[in-house]
Image 1 (cartoon, rainbow over the protein chains, first blue to last red):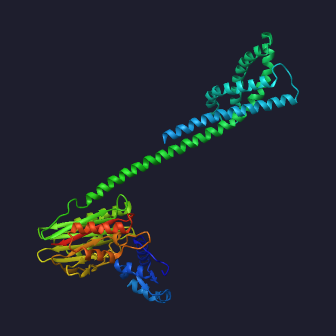
Image 2: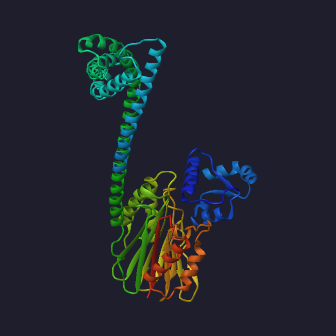
Image 3: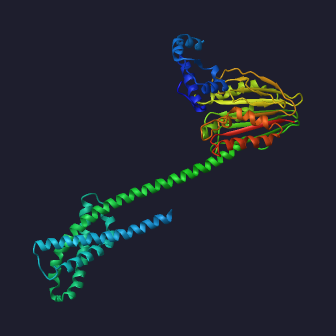
Length: 73
Length: 405
């Protein structure tokens, strides 16, 4: 998400839909490299609490197995 | 619009007439050249009679053939063409007989040789008929085809215009209905003043606010923002309004109400939509504020002392997970405080440099204008946002201000 400089509510909606359907499929959507503005939007909308957010892509990938199990639980 | 169409048809008629004359002159010249090369001579075979024949036959047959052409055009190719040539030939022979009768006195040809003159002119007629008939038939066919297409297009445009007008009317009705869902007169309780501004981005929008009075001392204020704009957002807003009105009561705490709303909305919403929402109950007996926010941009409480508090407690937006739990937040209001609730249309309003209005600007305006009444503060904020965007405001816009007297 390093190239995402702006996100509106429709963009958040798409992410939420992706997150929900990933969860239904027994997997998870991980977000990484959020810019400040994006992070702030997630914080204000309290969506940070539902998304799995990682500082870097590598960290997101390496934690994938653990996270998806955690998300299922 | 109508005038310009009429004008263009008239000018096309004139242009068509001149192009026909040009065509006939060219046919006559070609005929004369053929006869000259073939060395055909006779009293009616000079360039002048040939031009006269061609112009007479060409021009006089045109109006008659225009009437008769639709009869032949009902047949398929090549019968339409053959029928057209036969009709043209018969018409042309009749007109040739007339033309010969006109030309004879000019050339002082005796009346007794009328039929031999007609016979020699008849050969010309056959050639003229074949050339002009073929060209005109092809021209006519493409013209009829193009005119048909043109008519089809015009109809499509007319239908499109009617439909868009109907849609506009329906949207205007939808706007009326949506405005009817919002409180027409803002309920007031002693000790508080509530003022609002609501304006959708297009005719209808996804923003919602409501103010409910519970007895003489308690008031419930809510604000909500459905993802997206326009009709889809407005439909969800109507669902939100109906659910809120059904569940809200004096006994139901904000977090309980938001939880119930979430349950209902989650079952009625597309996966890529959600609703941010905040509900506050203010009890004027002790000036206590209880609220729960579902991911809504935090309402700002401006204390008279200059301090501010953001109303962040609650949980995630409505419509994502039906079983989310929400928590109540509590704050103590004091006389002179101002509570500002808005939708992201205000904080995310953009100017031409793509800078957002932002929460900070809203905080500054609130701090600067804390002495204003609720309705004055609404006007002041709206004015600042509009001037920030240089008048080109694009989003749904909702603002609720509660002033503690």
